[in-house]
Image 1 (cartoon, rainbow over the protein chains, first blue to last red):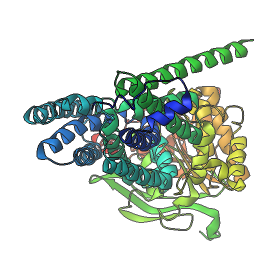
Image 2: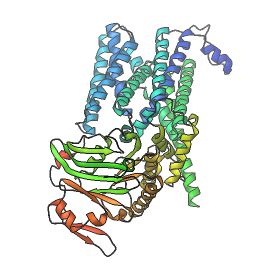
Image 3: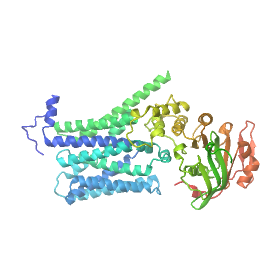
Image 4: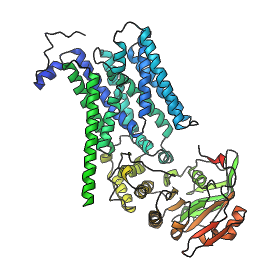
Length: 297
Length: 274
């Protein structure tokens, strides 16, 4: 973790020089590669998640990601295996819960909340049993961009590419099913299959994002850019693109700020994402007031 | 009988349906022609929405036959525009009305959702149906910010987008005030005539739409009858249908009031949808 003082020069306020310095370290290149893949994937899948009102499902998957990763560390497996395994299994379980609609909605969320608490406790136990990683719990929960291996970065890029390709093919029926399930079903859209498929994609996105932001800060990339984009535009395609661009912007800026300062990347990424969301809400409220005032005259 | 087949949108012959082992309705025979505006009436749980499900092929008949646009139920769904019950977009729905209508044109197609790269013909169709329902002024706004009547017009536009031969609207007037109920009924009548679409409109109250209808299908007891409102909504017919004394009164303003109709005859609990 110690940074070679001869190479590290701090912020020079000369943008090309600073960017060159950022890219001088291999770990930083890996972090930017992984961060870019994750931001694009989370921005696109998050946009559908916010539209489908499945943020609670997303949160549940993130909480399940933590014991998954901690368990993998304990078992001596790569962390990525733990993240992806736990999230995909969690997505299948969530699909099972929502397919069986015998219980009321509140009962379903109460049950899920109980499982979340248990998952966090389990993760805490695994970290306690595993003594190898001193700051393990904080990087699992709040993320780290140090020490992302080549394999991990390439895996994230590959997963993101597959997820985006699937989303591109199924995007329109998924949009239809998300907005208007009954009509979509009558028009021949396989609504249930899409709903299961989307939960699996969401599981992949959460598992990938957790590896950068940690399990608890997943929403900085999965919800905040999408929610901001939906404040700013009600058009599907521009909204989706805006969500991806916002995700990229907060990730790159967050990683760069973290590199040049003593504060963690997770803090910068969440703060930037939160700031963008607040600005978007203020802008929309002002625009609404202006429209109302114009209509009043 | 004897009419050329393509003009017929729907025909049921001696049809009966069961849900969970209980008869919903039986011995129903009726037909609906293209360009006809038909209201589907009856009390809660009498089987109005069940009829729409049968037409879509989502529920099999227990006996009798059904023909939808000359084919068995379920095979003609591409030619049916369907608007399910109680759809309402809440204020946080951040998607434009025009996008919702557009989904009616190509929402079931796989591939990249690139609206601007689609063929002009699809964009033209979206424009045309929005014009048809008179929603040009607000189609570009987020659908959640629109009133119930505006949303309903856009949803009707969506259902019309693929040029259906049969349009089925399940209680589209439910959440609207009286002025909007009449306006939507007038719109549906105009569409019916201009596009030669058969319309089945499920309604709770016949009065706001009475002046626009061609015929009604009235579900009561365990069966249904079809005919003009003057034939069906009478003391004699409804008494026979309900198998209980029912009286139809005509108010001074022309409104029909059905007095003494028993609510949801039997099996109330078993009819909840799953």
